Image (cartoon, rainbow over all chains, first blue to last red; front, side, top):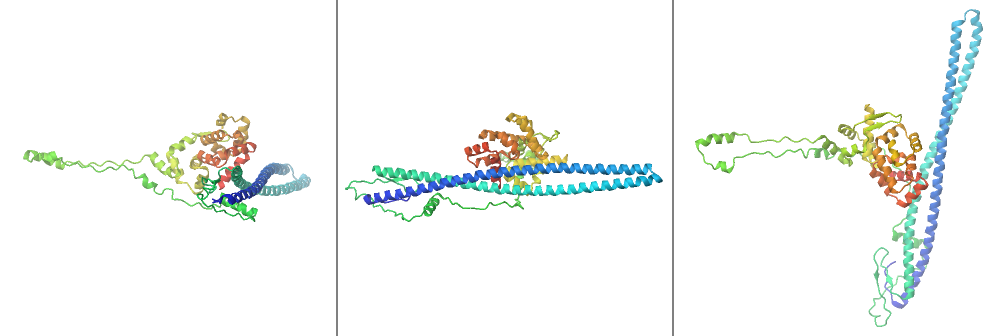
Length: 401
Length: 102
């Protein structure tokens, strides 16, 4: 709503008419928004159902793959048995047969060998077919997964749009309620509150009805609302006021080939040595009192002793402790050695029940920090530095075992 | 995984979880149990009553710094999130993936 200056009589009528029209437009807009919201909610529901179906299909395919792989195992075992049988026959033949017996057995063995080969051939063909089926099913799973990803992207877009429509609806309701109040105020002849803008506080303007005060009232200009405002133009005005823009944008997939390697240690190595604790060199000089004590030969030896005495002392620079060093290295990641210790367990427990005690030493943390790479930096942005570093330390410990 | 009992997980849920987890993830989860515990507590205190279902289905989302976990949940309307996750735990996984990828 913009600020108005009104001529009292005609202006009031026209303002009332304007408010009436605005009320109609806004109630139409509210209905539109509500129906859009309902449509989005329905699409969200459908998308969620599709996601569940795709996931169920994907699981079924995986179960089918397991079943086929079991079958392949069985067939390979059959092939092994057949080959073993053939070998036994050959061994029996070589150890027992000679002369005429050899001729009799040779036919039997030849037939057995051919049968074995046929069986092996048949089993190999079946294995090949099963592998093709598995390959096909894996492709299906891949397609289901990409469908699921696409649906997830759609779902998040719908949810974003839904949130925006909800905000617009809230705003529209507020404006509508304000207009209703204004209309009822006008009809009851109360003081009219003219709003300067939707986002600023209002300044009440009293409109005097008495003739003698007419001259004192400020002339008010009326903003003529064109009667031919279309619904779209009204909607655009509301959008401009709320700052809402119903744009469609493609989901941007993050392509991470390389993460910019930030200079992890920039400035920190310098900081390591800032508090090296080198103190000023102290030098004792003879005091004034001593200087003024007067010179005589008896004091000469004292003077010589004083002047020759080495009173300059150098304090050894205090090296930083190991914990201070590692905390300096961890500072860019926003964590400390103590924090890492508190978050990790003191053992690694494996799925087969094996438990290995583990102690996170300072050198483990230093090694892990020194081996932080681009993938680790990306991981830190998502799951946090503590989890990333602890996973790295765990992996290094396991490799060292 | 015995630390899960104190959050009300049943034997069946823990067995189902063991089936889901790979060898590496299992040992990682056990090693990072303090972080995981902290996140389970946060989700429970946030008001998600079916947190155990969420955990068994998507244990990987609990393996992140608590600050990151709170940051993800904080991006959504609380009442809406609790209501949606109660109806379908899959929603929380979608929300986490949405925040991670944007």
